[in-house]
Image 1: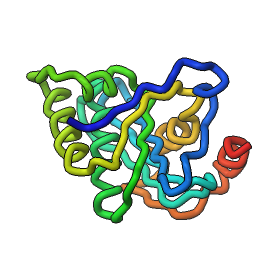
Image 2: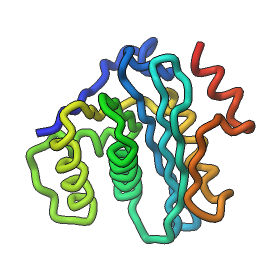
Image 3: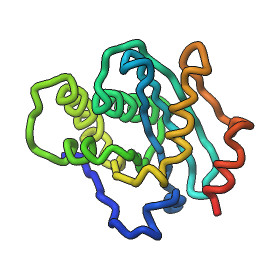
Image 4: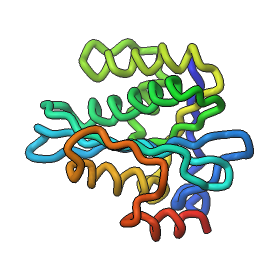
Length: 175
């Protein structure tokens, strides 16, 4: 079984982004829905222990996904991205508590959401240095903001530098 971690509900700890420990990459993940849930936007943002951006991606899909499915797709794509980029010791953070709870539950859900959770579980179990945690939305601002902007690019968008429109938000989180 993969490891997931529920962060303590300490308001001073979970209401703002926290740098990961040395040697750990933090991947903040989020999804959003547009146009009566017919378009799903998602984002992933990977940073090192200094808070420096390593890699970011945003994209959108035309689909009739539920919010839970969208959050699951965002996490699944993030896990696949870390694997394809050879990242180790990754802490994924999502503001979807139901997804984190589903990952830790032994229950098998017979639904599209359940299928996506099963895919995430398989990838997490084959990468024991990957951990998924729940964080409050306030601690996931960069991911949330980029997910909301995902429609501004015509296709999957990968960035290695902080977008100029997001610079203030990135710098603000590092203090």
